[in-house]
Length: 314
Image (cartoon, rainbow, N blue to C red; front, side):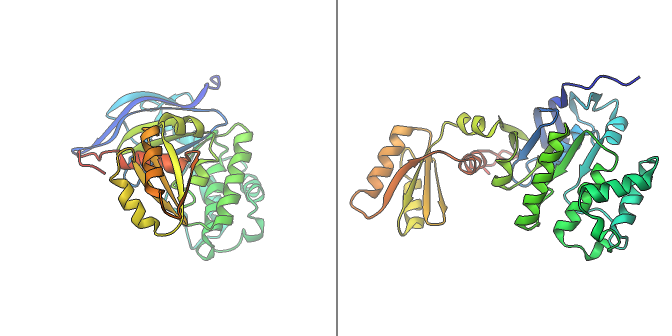
């Protein structure tokens, strides 16, 4: 008998994982709704990949509970693995097989009935027919990415777990990939995707930021920004790097970041920050204005104020 579809594709509470003395995942709780694209962000070594593997039953947590597609992540990991699509950071298909041969091999692993029809459907849905007989080793990064997504979708999963899927892929291929993710989400497929790119984060329905094993913020992009209560000013003019160094030592200034020809200056004490900025540009040709704090400002702030697993400042 088929079990009813769960409210959440992922619903985990207080997951913990140690490797030796290192606390890699620290009390992580997360919910991903059906048909939702959930962005998972954080610096390298922050625990993103380990968290994803815990959520889909590839790793057993030291403590914590949860379900993935309604299955218990500890007791029913085998069922989870057959019902999710997992795209690893590293391309993991065979260079000396064609695209079609790779997909056929994956279909055989899943023991899919009518696998040839399934492979043809997958080739068509991801626009791979014209290159179906091309050796995978000769493909560009964008085409390899498309093959990896086709392989993930071959057995028609209801949840995709994508670990930095667009790393090293050109901007056009990244845009096409995200358009495909939104088409899948519109069909009710849930997506948990880790990324370093702010433009991709802004295309997610919800976000979580993890640093050194701890979830520091989660919600919609607007909710994540508002949760940090940062005010931001931008300063235009010359010699911004020198000004940035000076302002970092000024009361009220928690962060300075040069963005091309502009300097973003942020702080949680809004009035003190405004006074510091106005004082810095007084009597100069510099121009300053208050702007809306962006996701990138917030993520740089979160990263700079987190501490690593061994207790040293990041």
